[in-house]
Structures are given as C-alpha cells and as structure tokens.
Image 1 (spheres, rainbow, N blue to C red):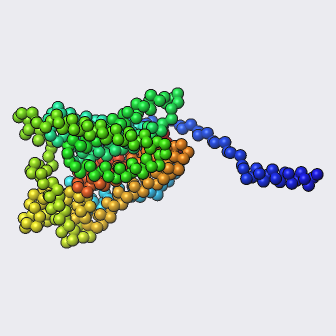
Image 2: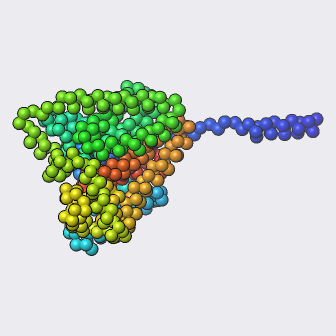
Image 3: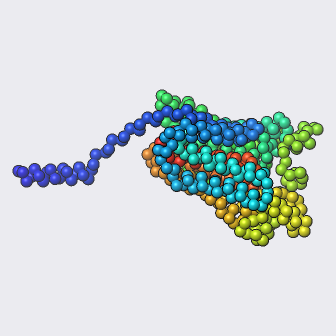
Length: 467
C-alpha cells in the first residue's frame, strides 16, 4: 500500500506539473494623480497642436507653453531628479541628434559669417531637446494630445474654409506660409486618424461612459477631416505626398487589428469621402472671385514668390531646374557644401550663365530637403539630418512592436501614439521631397516640438502612463 500510495502521489504531482493552475492576474495598482507641474505639461501638450494653425503665431505660442512647462517641472522635481530612471538609449539618441543638428548648423553659420539670422531656426532644436529630456520623465495624459490634435485639425480646416469661402482667398494659407500651412494641416489630420485607435479602444464603465467615447471619436473624425481640408484647399500638391507613408502605415495597422480592422477602414473611408466632398463644394462655390477682390485676396494669400502666378504655372519645371542647380553645387563641394550665402550666390551665377532658369535661381533653397542640405551643408550635414529623422522612427517602431504584443492582452490603444509618430515623421519627410521644411520657422517649430511631445509621450520611462 505505501508503494501504491507513492505511485499515485507521483502521478498526481506529474499531472499538476504538466497542467499548472492558471495564475490569478495581478490587479493594476491605481495611478497616482498628476502633480501640478505634470498637469501644466499636459495642458501645454494640448495647446501646441490646438493653436499651431488656428491663431497667428500659434505654433510659437504653443512651443513657449511647452518650454515653460518643461522648466517648471524640472524645477518642481529637482529634489528627486537624480533618482529618476535613466532614459532609454533610443530617446537619448533623439536628444543627441537635436543638439548636434543645432550646434553644427549654428557653428557652420558662424564660420561662414552668415550672421545671427542663421542661428535662429536651428536653436529651436536645443529648446526642444531640453523639453524632450523632461517630458520623457514626466507623466502626460495621452487624451490631451489627441484632443489638441482634433482641435487643431478642426481649426485648420475652419480657417481654410473661412478664407476660401468668406474672404474669397483663392489659396488660403491660414496665418503662415502657404506650403507650410498645407503640410502641417495634413500631418495633423492624419495623426487624428491614428488617435481613433486610442478612442475606439477606450474602456466603457461608469467613469467613462459610452457617450464620452463616442464624442471623442466624433471629435477626432472632425479633426481628421478638418486637417485634410486645410491641406487640400491651398492646392499646393506637395502635402499629398504625406498620404503615401500614411497609407502604408494604415494598412500595416489595420492588418494587425483583427476584428477592429473593418471599422477602421470604414471610418478612414468616410473621412476621405467627406473631405473630398467638402473640397469640391468649396471649389465650386468660389470659382469666380468677388469683383474687385482679386488683387487683395492674392496678396492676402502670402505668395511664396513675387512671380507667384507664373511660378505656380511652372512649379514642376522650376523645381527640376532648382534640383539641377543644387546637384551641380553638390558635385563641386560634396563634403561641407556652400552654406546659405554661398548657395544663393552660386545659384545666381548659374542662372546668369543660363545653366538653370533665372526664375529658379531666384529661390533661396532647392525645394528638396536632401538636395538642399547637401548643397549647403554637404554630406556631413545630410548625415546629421538623416539621424534627426531616423532616431525618432526607431523609438516609435520599437514602442509599436511592444504595443502589438500588448494588443494580444487587450491593450491595442497603446499603438496609437507610436502610429501617430510614424505618420508624423515619415509624412514630414515625404513633404520634404518638394519643399525644405526646415528653411521656415513653422517647419522647424512643428517638427522639433511635436517630436519632443511624441517621443516623450511614448518613452519607456513613462510606461506606466497608458491612458
């Protein structure tokens, strides 16, 4: 009997080992409320995209709010700052490339005697790098960013429609340069689509009822449609390039959503159809400008070039001429380039000699981000610019892969932020194929500070912040 009992005991133990009991899930501990300085950061994160295109100098106002919030939190957390966990390597790389870009551009301008004017735009990356170093260690309510993007998209579309249909401006530009307004609008609209991943997966309980989730979804759809309207009405065409990477990312995301993919595809289709219908209606209603208003509206549209009508009619041809001239300058001085003043001088010479069209020679940049930076800063500058773009992509793609694993545990909303980051960075790179975004203050500010917000929000240092 003892032998039989031992055998039975061993059999039971073996069965238990092969079929261990299902562990009881550990309940998620409640999150501590945000500190006052973190609430300030969250408010600034809302304001930056919400104001960027809807009020004059809105992107500057939002950036100042982000900077003040970052300084405030750094001071408030000074006693515990040394105990904070180290930043992930990928986040440190983003900060490093921001700093290197700023220092190289400012140092190059100083050595070439280009004056303080060329210090202004790159210096914004130093401020954004500081903000990112703070945001990556703070807790930010994700909903503030999505609501800010939605308000910004609705505002951009509203401003564009007002200028087009009420003021009669043929090509509305909001309160900034027309191409930059269009580019920023499309990026805001596309990021609102990514926000639907977050809104559609919000839990519904007594604290967050279904009606609230519905309102958030409708608001984000409005932001997406408004952003796309703001991109289409200026008729700049370059903003359309952002749709290519967004479409690829969208297909990738919807392919991993399982049962939710049909809803996402239907929603995206509705947004695009509504935007197209609005665009066609606004175009039809303003085909004939009001009498006596043509000159005023043309001036109000803030054309990029004194010969704007002729330039628009030959935009493709002139871009090819600019690219031809930039390529010749790259071949002549490939490593370090010619600098800003040297580029202008040399392209003027190429135009005077008939090598390129004189109208194309009148522009101060090559209308292509990569040809422009290689002609002005050489291969060294192009390498730094590549790192400035690739380092955030590494952060977003890494977080996205972890979010896909979380999706299997019912946490699909985690992939919304990295999806928005991928759309934003790749979309801006795409628009840079026909425009030099970093030659404009709005282009620098939007990329630098939106990158600081997005990378900071998805940083592993704040992994506890998922809602």
